[in-house]
Amino acid sequence: MSGIGNKRAAGEPGTSMPPEKKAAVEDSGTTVETIKLGGVSSTEELDIRTLQTKNRKLAEMLDQRQAIEDELREHIEKLERRQATDDASLLIVNRYWSQFDENIRIILKRYDLEQGLGDLLTERKALVVPEPEPDSDSNQERKDD
Figure (cartoon, rainbow, N blue to C red):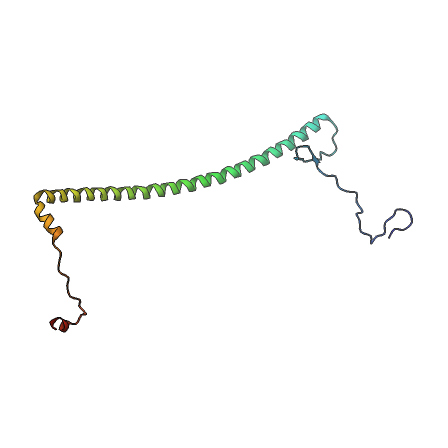
């Protein structure tokens, strides 16, 4: 409740302090940080404090950049280790594939030699049909009936 004049009562909502100043916003939408330099007596002192502030900001940016570089180095090392294991696996697979390929060539050469020795034998083998064997669980007495 307002008393006489424009004074506010202690229980009324509102701020007792003036509103804080907001950071200046440029047209591009970026915010500019305001820096309090305190009391400055000369332009040399102003230059020194400005350079110190810039130096501090550059040091922070350098630390951030070094942290990012460290993370990227770790990631690169991880990828290099993975590449090394993949290369080793591919080498093993390639070795086994070459051995398989050589075995197939040997088998094909043997088959060609057998083909050359006697076409009759291979044709006969292809035409011979083995007789089916009786089932082991079939009743043998029924065959006689």
